[in-house]
Image (cartoon, rainbow, N blue to C red; front, side, top):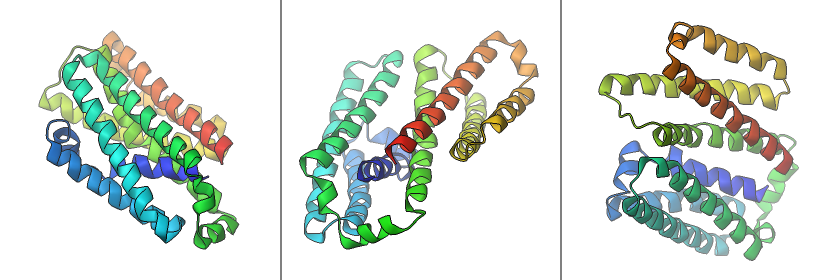
Length: 242
């Protein structure tokens, strides 16, 4: 449970509480990276003071934030040394994988389960606590992190750059993708597997005319299947953990 909560908060702090401006600038400017890490530290401190013993909370937040800074700094350097488009997905995946390993390592080495406070113990007694954590954890993965993963996947397989007009279409597609993943996740979490087919069919009908374009059809299938797999894997893993 603690691992799932920590990973969830990491994703929220690393994506939801980070503007697109900071996201771009932190790759070039150390000041922006430090600002991002400060926000990251504050969010984790709030969590740690709620769930863990107060005397340990500050130190835990400091450790995880310093490690977050180092991971991002090293990955940023690698991206500068190897600026090829097809490597963006690799660096993004590597970044998130190292963070997950870091969180699991901290949990095991510092024995975080035994550092929780009475408030967390009371929360565990509530019947719906696990369900709430499950939903928040799933949504923290399938929204912005999934969108970034899919975008970098397309960048890695395509050499095209997009104009402002196409960028607006991509924004619309991003919103549609998020809504699609939210609906599919809710259906999967409630074991309504049969309805998922109708969601995918409705999306395909809306794009029917564009399917005549082979390039669009291939990218549509890649995006839709990747999006669906992210939701499916996230729900199955988190249901197993929680």
